[in-house]
Image (cartoon, rainbow, N blue to C red):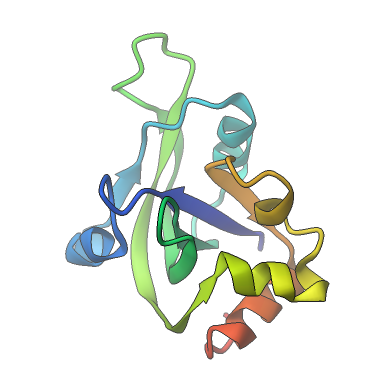
Length: 140
């Protein structure tokens, strides 16, 4: 199974908002970048993603699971983009900051460090394990 990273401004949609959505989850919508769209299209039910607070926080704060695969985003007037559904799995016991990721040599090629503006990103298995270790969480 693949791993992912989803970015959100906490003022728009925060980890706490995601947790409040409970097991029913929420749509990960509003993505308007073609590379991010490609990643959304590749996501499969059961895959997991890091939940990253962008903006001032710049840290990975939790893990979500894909519970609904790619479908059209009804908020997209161009009918070009889609969304997936995700639910919160749990917080990272220790949030992993962008600065910590940059300091970790084994994460040097992580998309987050090379293309920080991309809102939906793949994460390799090795990167997933490193971030889980940094966040004091067992890899799933």
